[in-house]
Length: 478
Image (tube, rainbow, N blue to C red; front, side, top):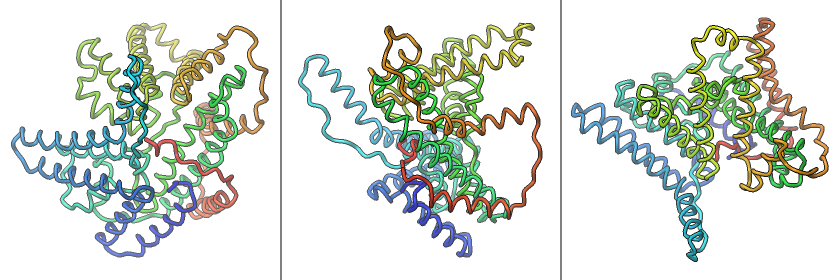
């Protein structure tokens, strides 16, 4: 079920009506849980058993961890939860990657091993569900949250359908307290939810999907046929596409959750205004970045050990971050690339920190602009790695876009006039943020009823008149 498709709109309407017509906490949550399981099983019903199995394991593990006073017993239950989650994630997501890598090595060594003729369907949102389950049992182990006594409540926490497929990764301490009583939906939440919902649809249907169909996919499919200028535009368009696609999903998820009375954490903070690679990862996919920090980087020792150990920890984090996104070597290289950049940034930052004239220079506007340009160049280079359709095509694109190609190259290709417009619209929020910081924000208070009516009208117009591309959200594939 595509989150921006007509089937989802009908599903959502019936779920909202049923949820708000029912009375009592138990009835509401049973209905919402059943709807969430239906949403999960829509494409592949057989994988509902995977979700249910992990849910039972983590629920029981949480109870056993809290009930036990024996440290070894507590660690055993925590290990069971972590191994179960990561084990199933590994089976479904990485089996083909390991098999294909092994076959390639054997073929390179001269062995006539046939290529894989089978495939494994990836369960919807298994990466997000795995991280939520692990964070719950770890938080119970650390004493940061109480174990959930009611199985229905815990199952709803890990299966809540608006964010189940592609995040944000929600922690127990953020969601479970809101479930104490069914949240009362306010007029502000209805209006804010409509605003986020329409914003997400706009980003997805009118920017991300259109950029992909008319420009990004054709260019990346055959970069050898395009000149350097066109390739540069394609890389920028791809950066806008992936941002609008993923943040669009997040907006829809946050907006939908508000209509049930729940508040989900934000996942983006204007990432393309980052002035360093570290700043970017503090702004992009916040729920994943903070998860990796709190449940992996800090337990590994963070930056408390030696310099070499700190750099190793950074590299481990980003290689795993790359593998979490996709079981392909290009994602591994993307992780290594970011790990190297983070290490270099850390070395640079510590080398210049505390030097008065450099500190003053780094706070100046010209230096900020230079830092922003350098950061964007790094990010665009990394985005080529994860979008290229072949290594040869990716290398051609990088070399030609950087102007390193000898000879004249292909004849310049006209850029579709709509592409720069969509790029500008996709980045409008970033531009507006810069304007607000430079000239101040003019407070405008629009009544919730007026905002809600305007947003509802916009939703109807988008659904009726939006171009019919209907692509799956990129992060639903993870």
